[in-house]
Image 1 (cartoon, rainbow, N blue to C red):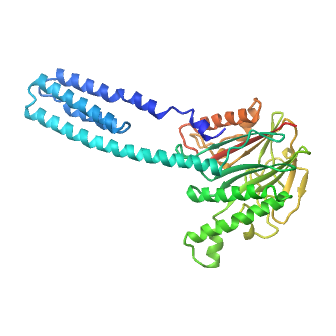
Image 2: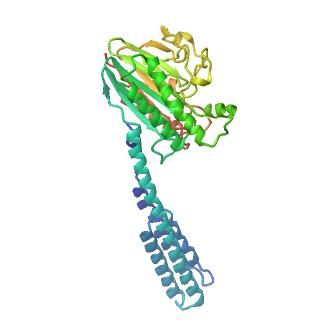
Length: 404
């Protein structure tokens, strides 16, 4: 499942255009009849200019010009019925209508040119998304996987949220992350992290070593971005600016021979484990700093867990690997379990009253089967929750089911 699959559910724009075409013709007919039957001192002809002006807002120049010509013809008919085309009042109305129709037709042409440019840019963005954010395979070893990406803006196709999976000799490694910021810089940082993950997931034997490699690959790039923004050379300013550029991430290792999952959480929302209708957040004992910030903190640093305050009885952790910066925890991940990875754009989506989306609650209420069905349910529910409101941030979700 990807963004284009969700976009296909929307009403095609060209169908909407065809439906809107009835409005200007209905307006022309209404004004023409009203002007004919109205008293001689009442003139409704000037209202005909609304027909081509309305058409120019959604149709092309040819359609706009045609509607304008019909409006001019209707004005001529009215002039012939009520008096004479050469009448001064009707002559000025016809000339004004012709000039306005020409102007709005020109505007429609300019808008159409702009729309074509946007379509080309959107095509490039879709191609970039397929390169940077490759769709995950539905079956990876003993795992069944589904993924979805929702852009905050309706016309956007790519942003700073990311996910990836790599099949290794001993299991499957997964990554989900969220780049701070938006725009091309966020896309570039996401591409750097994804490239580093794909290059090192097969090389680093330990999960902590993999995350350390990702930190080493990301930190110089974030420093370059900061330097390119015109920051002063002062040491304090440099540290402060680097602190504004980072990537939250969760890196997981699912071995084939053990029904467990190893997790390093770098300031990211904790994965949720669904087992028998019960949802458990996989809160690590020692969260690592977000990627790009490790050198700014001391060796004894421990970030405040995301969603702190949940009952420790709901945590499955039973083993913790103590590393200086990137410790990993091990959690049970058994046959039939479904694990949900997500970015903060999901849990920060608000409804009309400002209420955040209750992801854990909606996940626990789900009674279907399979990761694809789960993501389809969550996407529909999330969009319904934010009905009439754009998502505050891009949102990505990955669902993984252990098949045994």
